[in-house]
Amino acid sequence: MTTLSERISQSAFDGSRLRVVLLLDLYDGAQNKFLEVYEHLREQVSSVPGHISDELCQSIENPSQWLITSEWESAPRFLAWVSSEEHVATVQPLHGCVRDTRSLRFSVLREAGKDVAPAKELGPTRLRAAPRRGDGVVRHALTFTVKPGSEPEVAKLLAGYASPKAQVDESTRLRRTSLFMHGNRVVRAVEVEGDLLAALRHVAQQPEVRALEEAINPYLEQDRDLSDPGSARTFFTRAALPAVHHVASGDHEPADVWRHALFYPAKDGCGTALARLLAGQDEAAVDDPTSPIEASTVFQRDDIVVRLLDMRAPLEARPALSLGVEGSHKAAVLARLLDSAKDGVPTTDQEIARFLARSEMRLITDRRTPVQA
Image 1 (cartoon, one colour):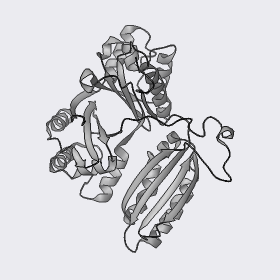
Image 2 (cartoon, helix red, strand yellow; image 1 turned 90 degrees about the horizontal axis):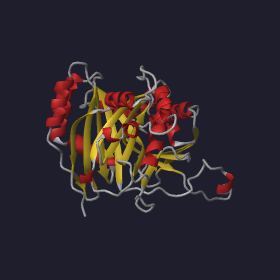
Image 3 (tube, helix red, strand yellow; image 1 turned 30 degrees about the vertical axis):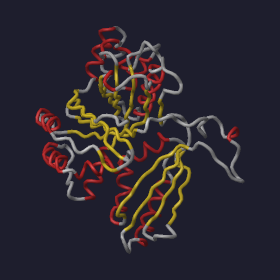
């Protein structure tokens, strides 16, 4: 049975405030232009729901290094903004000023200061009561669509590329890459020990990966030019599929489980509610010794939700649990949130099995490196 010391849970749905830290390295001579762009950006962001405040700082040691910190009511509010087309357009002018960026996101756990109210006065959704327990792994995904009819060729390309070197540097390594397709949608989920940004940059620079990306380019629905930094940055910003929830029992070795992915197209504006519904079920599932779910990661961007499951049994062993509707009224809630639920509420075993089959993504490749001692 899962114990509290073993259980891993990381979630954007804990209700705590979010602090976002953006580190920037500016091009020489770009400071004045950057300040103009920042003022415009600040005016737009200030009206975004959930935004509380932001602050701009410049290094006293290196004038090209800048820092923007912002505070948000919750992680879902920030993620909704950063995933929007409005955000893509708003930050576009920054590309001509900034040589490099790094974004970090933190939930607010404790506060101290003369003007800070005691935690008990801030309410249950302001500060986290306890720190999260992780496993040293950062999870992220990318998603994009290919031209209808090109799916077989794209799947062949994705399955046949040579894996890049796993070790990025002394503190960062690629642990696992899983590729899935659902119709003409591709989802690439990665697990990284250490620095996610360093790992993604490392992968992008590998000759075998560059060759794969060039081979896929003609099939993409959204054009991109990876030789153009601005075009590449815009593409990967739109393709980002953040992990909003991860939970694992920690009881089993990777060899004991099988990986699956399910695709849930939410109705307009319902992506966060759908991701939260699935996350809540899986929190309970990993604490159930009879559950076949060993771990679950929910990825969400706008109304695209992907649920990655590591299971100790086939999906069909408990289809309602695998679909995310085991328990009272959950099937009805799922049907209300799904854009593709044209058959109504799945109530019988046969209907649930049909929903599950429609949601399951095709595994193209699942590559992992041994966990180092």
